[in-house]
Amino acid sequence: MLAMEIGHWSLKGFGRFIVEEKTSGAAVGLVGPFEPYGWPEPELGWDLFDGHEGKGYATEAARASRDYAYGTLGWQTAISLVKPANIASARVCERLGCVLESTFTHERHGQMQVWRHPAPDALSDGGMEAYA
Amino acid sequence: MSALFRITGETQICIPTLETERLTLRAPEARDFDAYAAFRASPRSVTVGGPFPRAVAHEQFNAVIGHWHMRGFGRWIIENRDTQTAIGLAGLYHPEDWPEPEVAWSLFDGAEGQGFATEAARAARASAYDILGWDQVMSLIMPNNTRSVAVARRLGAILEGPYSHPKLGTLDLWRHLPVERILA
Image 1: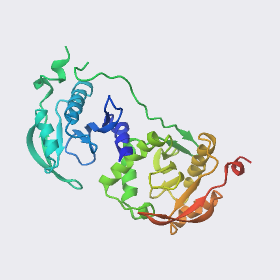
Image 2: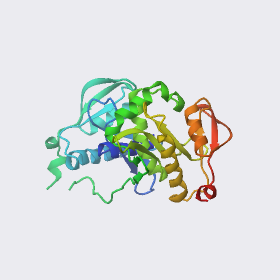
Image 3: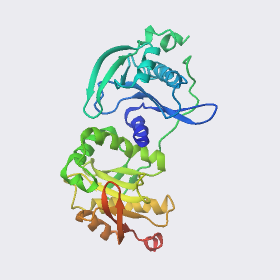
Image 4: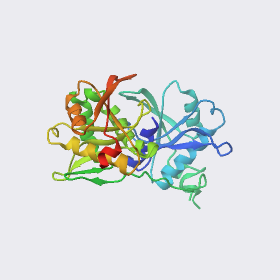
């Protein structure tokens, strides 16, 4: 629901970006800080559209959006919620240095894994340390 | 500064604010959500496909704002200027599964019977004609929604025929007075 994604920016002051592939100009997914109703806390979310998996785009975009959340929005921590069957997203979490912390059950979306991202000062590949 | 990205632009969502005799039509804000969710959960929302759980209403409320960005028009919160309370929504609405854009209105519980829907819908229709340059517009109304049918009649709309919606069933398509008749 794309209109919902846009309204999220207006109501929360942050939201998800469209991920555009620079070379083709194609929209390949959504990524960014996200807090739908009933979430335990704000998360970094990502979805790749069909056919754009396997190129590292989710990792690249999620890493940039984490830097945006920490550096621009001033978040001190971040989670990502992943459905247990979503192996590809769990792999992205691992690549981003996240730790599987717990599970969370949403009234509409069911059970999800809570992955905790490294804190801003623990990051060597972005976040505050990269701000020299 | 980030090592991972550069910020190279910014996108604004533009929602104008309109004033009518008694009402302000303005952008939805986070503080309006409780009143919106209460309406979407109430039995009265059956006329708009409800009732909806609060989590669904939250997505729908976000989408009211996003619609402005997607279409360049949308629905406002209707605020009663006297009491400074949000009493409903009205505006121009064109979801993906609508046959064409419509003038839409909903009043929250307790705001009916004072002509607010008619006043807001009239302004919304005028914005379609005067600001957007449309030459005609319609409204889709569930046949048993007698209060909204009365508003459509008050606005001079004419029942054109049924429209079969994939999820909402049979709706009546009310055709509004064309722009020439409004301006005359």
